[in-house]
Every structure is written in C-alpha cells, then in structure tokens.
Amino acid sequence: MSSASASKIPRGAPFLAFNISVGLFIVIFLLTPVLGHFTGRSEEISESAAQLAHFRKIARSVSSPTNKALHGVDPFLPGTEERVVSADLQASLKSIASNAGVNLLGIRGLPGSRHQKLRMVAVSAELEGSLAAVRDMVVAIENQTPFLFVTAASFRSVSEGEDGPIRAELKVQGAIRDGGPAGATEAGAK
Image (spheres, rainbow, N blue to C red):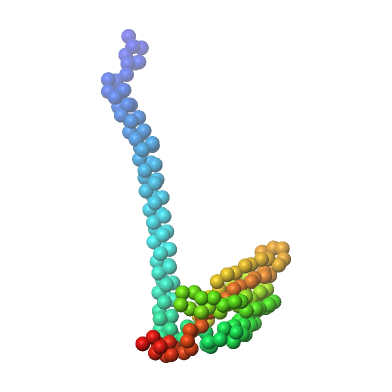
C-alpha cells in the first residue's frame, strides 16, 4: 500500500499544472511579441524625435542668418543680356573653382531657359579634384549671392580606390531679372 499512496498525485496538481502551462503559453506566445513590437516602435519613435530635433536645430540656425542677410541682397544675376551674364557666371565659377582647389577642365555656356517667370542662365563646368574639394565647390556655388543652383551633377572616379580624384560635370543655373532693374519691373506693372 505504501507504493500506491506514493504514486498518488495530489488532487489540485493537474489543475495547477494546466493553469501554469496556459499562463506560460500566454506570456511566451502572446505577450512577448506584443511587448517586443511596442518596444521596437518606441525606439523608432525616440530615434525619429531625436532626428527631428536635430533637423529643426539645423533649420533654425540656417534660417535665422539667412532672413537677416537677405533683406538688402538682390537674388538675381546682374545684367539683362544672357551672353554677358553667362560670361560673368563663367568667370565667377572659375574663381570659385580655384578657391576650392579644384582643377577646372572646361566651362561653357548653355542655352538659357525659362522657369515660371524667371529667365535662367545655365553654365556647364567640368572639373577634377578630390571629393572634399568638389564638395566645397558645390557648397560655395549654392551659398553664393546672387543665388546659383547646381541643377545637375555627374561624378565618376578617375582612379581606382575610394580616395582618388574624381571628375565631375556640374550644370549651374542662376536667374536674371526680366526688364532690367527691380524698379523698372515694378513700375511697369503698376
């Protein structure tokens, strides 16, 4: 009789084992994935918030000096004849290239175009230099006053490896004012 009483399972043990197994099933297969999903989303939201704060900081630092500096600056290239303005733009790009440490291989005027109500003068510049020097030139062009825009760019490596010089072709555009000086356009409109 002693062996029969030892193998006897307490009366509530199967119920307790079933409840524990259901509880483990719920935790392992239902709660863990849901909590993992919310944890991942929380991390993504935190990273996005930090990135947004960084971009807002950059936008504030860029927009504040720009707004103050633009009140007395003419955003248009000086001149009214496209060929003359294109020649001035080419000379300006040569100067920017020499300041940036880039070897200017060729520069030529492109046909002008219209963008909304603006007459655009375009120049194509082919240059060679280190990646940092080419980047400095693009930054100098786009921080120029009157405003210039790099509207197309093509880059290719001249040598093997990542640190070698690159050859770039940039299309740079600037706007010229229609009808001469600013006062003439505004007076003609009234």
